[in-house]
Length: 212
Image (cartoon, rainbow, N blue to C red; front, side):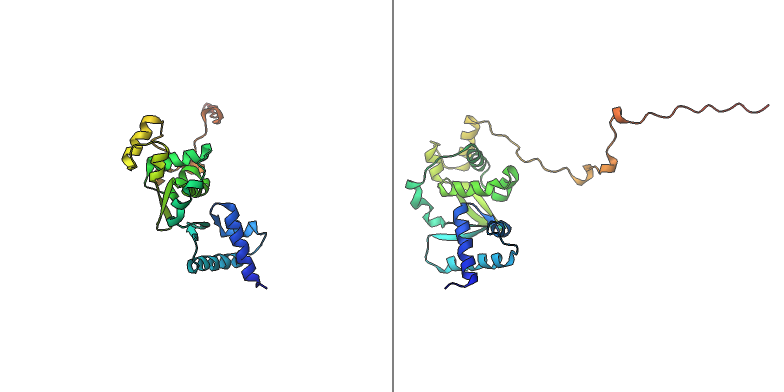
């Protein structure tokens, strides 16, 4: 009979498999209905080591502070023939941003799209349209040759893809609005009162004439 830790490892594996997207330890803990994240964290580490030592086409990949159960890069091309290329508007947007700004870090894509970027990258990678390469604590994203072939782009070079997109689509030149520099930040106490709400100045006080 499997121990409690083994059972928890299996449960974590099942949740990662069913989610189809990277999950944090907190998200795994919530999905399993547990209060303490520490056993889940230990189970994730055990699952990582298990897949590292197992002969498998799958791996547990750390993506920032999240974890994903996914195909190893060497086997992505193997499933192209049975992988449907059906994309919703959100997926198309993610793919367009990756194609236009490549090579782009996944952390930058998250700034543009929010946390849904993690799920979209996994989906596009599974379709064989995006290649991921570890880069520090994040991933570097580029499009694949299949991307160019599928969409009829004559070249797989990033600069040529960018030119193609500029000719076919309206691609925003600036997607991320950086925060203002510290010198321009205004504290709540320094916010001026709108003219309509400004208090009216008190009437002038007439001085009494000097006594005779």
